[in-house]
Length: 234
Ligand SMILES: C[S@@+](CC[C@H](N)C(=O)[O-])C[C@H]1O[C@@H](n2cnc3c(N)ncnc32)[C@H](O)[C@@H]1O
Image (tube, rainbow, N blue to C red; front, side, top):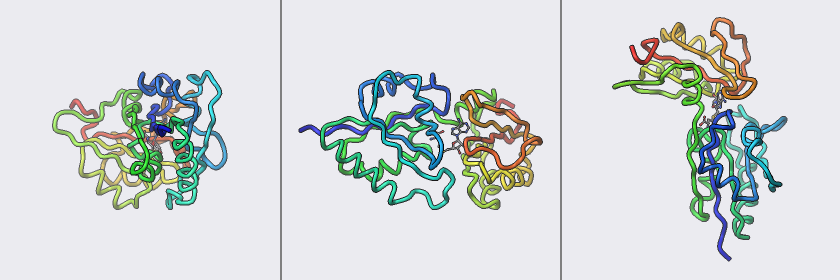
């Protein structure tokens, strides 16, 4: 029997219309969906593609704590890998849907590393959250000879400051309970007046809030963007 294919499908960061034609075609062609989900509550990835689902799928939710610094859990991914391998062996194609792009901090990478040597895996890129947030905020990320740095807010403050200082364009992801430390890093690196905050971009709960009005904690699905010159075109 021919083995099935595992598709890592980028589905964009929030707006359901930001899925690519390629990802949509694959979504319609498979019968099994795999997606990450928080321990409590709904999966953002599942919510994003919901308007596109017009049949019954077999659904496998990989439950994990979103903000866990010990991430990824070997046990959780080990179990998911075994399940997925069995289904691929039986000839089924599977779509592992990934919020944004699968290869930009995507939890899909933990499936990819476990399965790439033994299975056929195809990755379909998606619109990632920094790109979507820049468009919504009307703030180009970088121009000309600028460099862009994407910084996980989970890093210690001194490291965040150092990384903020190496590039003209700055994006901070994984904010959540780290907001106070990130605001302090922005101040110390002279970026506070140039920075914008957006949460749940592209979803109906989207909020753009001035940094001076933010109170901790903020949602995990939030981004801060800044440019050293204020606007990238200057
Ligand atoms: C584990 S990373 C995954 C990034 C994703 N693969 C991508 O390409 O955008 C999760 C972080 O991306 C950012 N993010 C993802 N979707 C977002 C959204 N709709 N609005 C704001 N930030 C988002 C947040 O900073 C969040 O903590």
